[in-house]
Amino acid sequence: MREQEGGKVGALRDLLLDRADSQKEALVHSAEAEAEAWKKAEEARLEQQVALIVDEAQARAQDIRRRQLAAMERERSLERIRLQNLLLDEGVRRLEEALVALSSRPDFDDILFGLALEAISSLPGADSLVLRPGPKEKPHVAGLMRRLSEALPSIRFEASPEAAPILGGLWIETSDGRRRVPADWHSKAGELRERLAEALLAAH
Image (tube, rainbow, N blue to C red; front, side, top):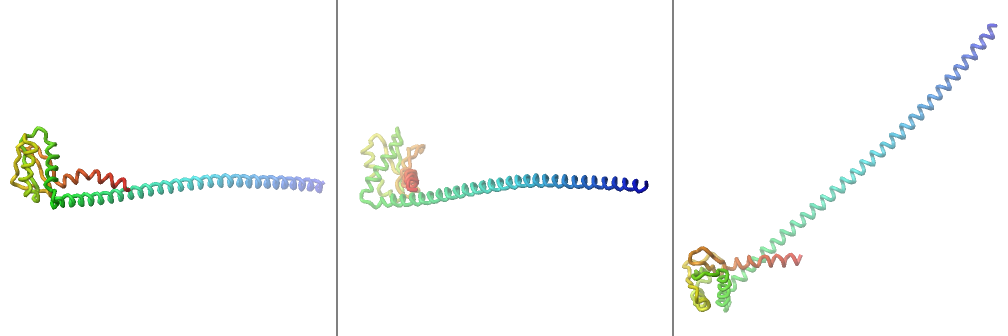
């Protein structure tokens, strides 16, 4: 009798142990499955983060490159403008030198006469004008006044005792000093500066 009871207890124990092993194995499989799922989810999230980081790095690199190119272009533009200004200044300087050299030409009296007529046309209504020549032009003033008086008898001309502080040419002023037209070489070179600038821009 006791042997039968002992056998039943042993069988029950074995059954319980089998069930425990089965549950343990099921729990292990479940844990492994959960771990694998978590691993895959983390790997996917990590890949997404890496992709975002790469995209941001590429966008930042492209932005830096654009900024560098823009800065280089600005620098080239500034250097081009600086060079054009240097060439323009040099062109104006040489033009002034060429204009000053006109005083040595045999037809300089004719040049000075034409220069004065052009300036006088900018003073409509004036009936009395003062000629203020540059230092090199003073010896030519008497002849210039005679020619102007013959060409424009309605205007009275007089010469200023003081030379104008100019490279060459002359100033023409109304007798009351309210209006003045510079007909000097520096002013003429300045008038041609825009034309020189256009020529430089066309050349570049």
